[in-house]
Length: 419
Image (cartoon, rainbow, N blue to C red; front, side):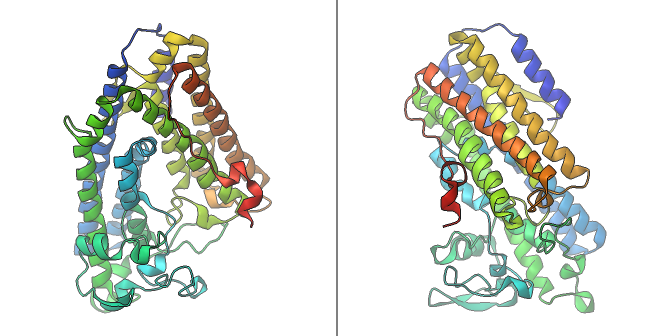
């Protein structure tokens, strides 16, 4: 959604009188938005697969750039679904396949010498599956001569039970398209060259055929996983049915998702923590330097849930009775406060996005001593915290039980971060 469209939706909502709506109607809107956003994620993932196929078939600077552009486009609708994670077990149990981070990229492919090797925490941190058609994992010899989606999903992802062994999903594909970002807190993304997918003597860094095989398998798996989730939110799907069968639980899930993404996940783990550590490895989209967009569309997804409005990638609007309507019927002032806080958050996240697009990348904002960058990031953090406090008042006003908003040491116990 463009900022002008987002502002228009907000203005229309503020101008509308409080309507008597039923919880069932609000839940239907919430589920319809989920189905549409995951549907858009699937469509853009299919376009990513097409671009990956073109890169593998005819490697060039142009086909590499087209694949990167397709990946960036795929992130826009997917990030808007993250408010559905918390409170919806079907989504939360599945989400790690698509968006787990950070990852030990040495599991997948070659890395710079500064990366190091295996660690006590992760014996597979530098396994380099692309360079090794056979290897030992958990004491068992593994045949990786053919890299398939099933191999990534069933054998390699979270190997040895280690969450850092992210073998699939958006960030594995991101690493294979951009490579490591070795710029630290200086400007610049990963610099993988298209020749890493070339054939014959043009191939760089060896194993170009297997690298293409891995990239293809990972991209295909994103599509398969999204097909599953779209089905869960379709009429009769389990995620939708779980909500319609328990209306109070559904409202709880909506507010849990909004609050947990606002506070512990986005304000805490994705923003405040990286700033405290001054560590670009804490960037969400660290290889591509796309973190400013990742944060922005996470914030927009939270707003979508509250306002009951989602702008699809084809320009159409999915909208209906919303949490905003429920709150306004009980306390119009609180609804106005919630909408204002959402608008403030989007403005602050938009400032981060604008600054990054103007040349100050998000990892530069995290650099020690960058007061301007720190102010931008903390502007977003503080707005998200304020937004969460209002969400807690919404919970009380609606009389909702079982809302558990996730926290983060970076916000709740900063000293523990450095222990």
